[in-house]
Length: 194
Length: 194
Image (tube, rainbow over all chains, first blue to last red; front, side, top):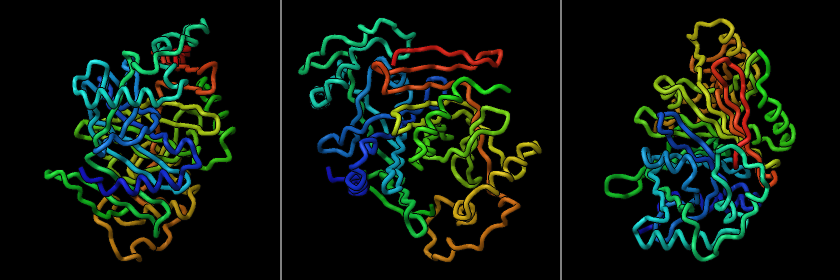
């Protein structure tokens, strides 16, 4: 699969903002089962090989895992402070949990688990998120999980984009490009008013 | 109306991140008329006097103005890089456009227009956002709009919170507090697992 035309703009932004660790943080909007929006910060973990899908990790016990079952569409908003540009990426989510059947994605799930920091892996062994706080500190100091085999609640989350809205605040006066995936799976780019 | 208990946490975060101009930028999720989520960066403009409502400005010609008519619920995600903390604020939006009847909010709309920078005001005189780019640069160099009377497409946007989810990544190991507005309009705070 060829790289989508917006990929070079993202690569460029990541490079020019590499001094900021939080340039890899973005905000993902989903829809709750009651029809209201949800929004949270999530860490970009690169692109899935041979695809234009963005990789994230999540916990099967989190609210978004449930929301995705009912409404798999999401929009991430990615603001790069150094270059003052924003990407709004609309796409379809795939939650790759421990029982996901496709071997190639199960392999990607194991691979991203192995690439996580020890601290990031440990969070998946913490108590149930969002429930009343467990006051016993030992609950947050579990033994290190296996490095090779992900915990069952560990999920790879993939976003497959169909639209990318790129706004550069430092334009003349600003630049905005809209990339659409057309019915032939080709990308169409249009300059629009900011 | 008393200040909600989460207000001091926001004030503290704003103060400790004041070196970053983009600490006042946050991401607002809404729901599109087709039921899919939308997400964009928006600038926090302070709180409405005598209330806990967050103030923003927007253009009546933007997509979110249309989305709000059908689904007024929103969730903003506000990440503070210096202190590594996140607020997820769920609430109900009010779009105060030029024909909004309540005088006190119309007054707030005029007041925030007057407080904007010249550059910010000028954007409301630009061509229709999101439509094919007008190549004539003069279209983006309109005469300065009246300082006292907002352009008709200028809107004040208010978010009235009912829930605030505050996550501190620098806790022991992390801290997370959930504030809920109860049926008596009182705020209830609960510590939950991160």
